[in-house]
Image 1 (cartoon, rainbow, N blue to C red):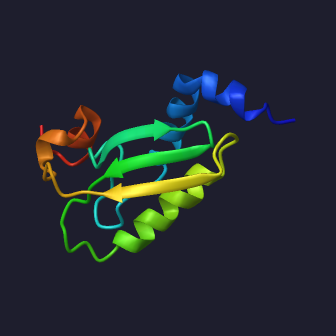
Image 2 (cartoon, one colour):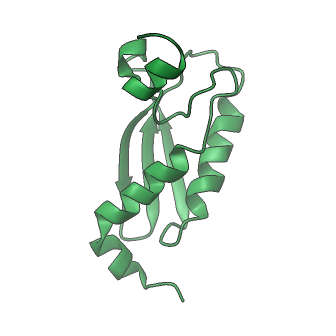
Length: 112
């Protein structure tokens, strides 16, 4: 049985952690690292109406996989209890750079 939305909203940090775990399952097809550790996710907010608002960027503005990445984000996040809708704000400022990557991502890509 799923808890009601107020319980999920009041436990906002847990919901955000579950969102992050789902984002770590989404990969840029051209880079063998998940989008969260790549540093493509700038902000995650949830609302009482069970919407996840995600502000993100891509490694390049002309990314040919942009639509598939965003579709996969929506599929992963809406599968979570407590989320009915995902709104993705794709931004280009600040521009993504390799310094935004986690240490794990840098190790995976031999950048350290």
